[in-house]
Length: 199
Image 1 (tube, rainbow, N blue to C red):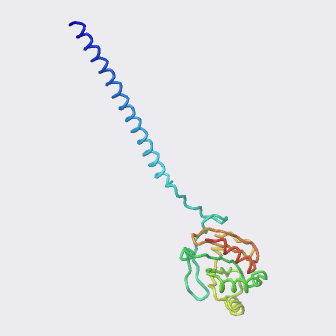
Image 2: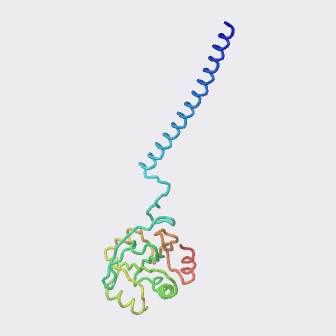
Image 3: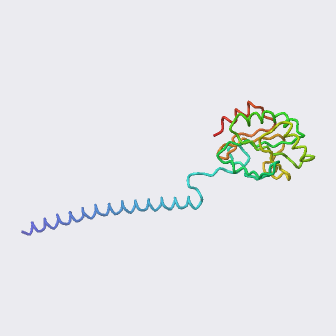
C-alpha cells in the first residue's frame, strides 16, 4: 500500500512539475510577445514624434528633385499669381528681361510650346532691370505672347531662385517637384523633350 501511495505521490509531483514547466513557458512567451509589442509601439511613437510617418516630404530647394519654392507676383495685367495655385499642372518658370538677346531668341519657341502643350508658363520678368513697364508691354505685344508675364519688381523671386544668368528656366512637375533646370535659352524641341519626362 505504501508503494502505491509513494507511486501516486511521485506521479503527482511529476505531473505538477510538467504542468508548471509548460505553464511558465507560455507565460514567458506571452511576456516576450508583449515586450515586442511594446517596443513596436514605442518605435512607432518615436517616428511620429520625429515626423517620420514613412512618407517623406520633399525638401524645398533649387536642385532637380527638390520641391520648388513657392512665390507670389503680380502680372503685367494686374492679376496676382501664386506658384502653388498650379499644383496638379506641369509648370515652366522662365526668368527673363527684354534687353537679354537669348531671352528674345527663345520667346517665339516658348509661345509655340505654350500653344501646343498643356503647360503653364510663368514668365518672370526681372522688372527692376527694365527701363520701364512700357518696354515690357511692347515686348509682349511684339512677340504676341499669350502666357502670363509676372513682374518681379524688387527681384525677390529672382533672389529666391538664385538667378544668375538669364534666361534661366525651371520645369516643375504636377507635384511641384523640379524635374529640369536650364541656364540659357531653350529651343522648342528641348522644351517638349523635358515636358514629356514630367508627371
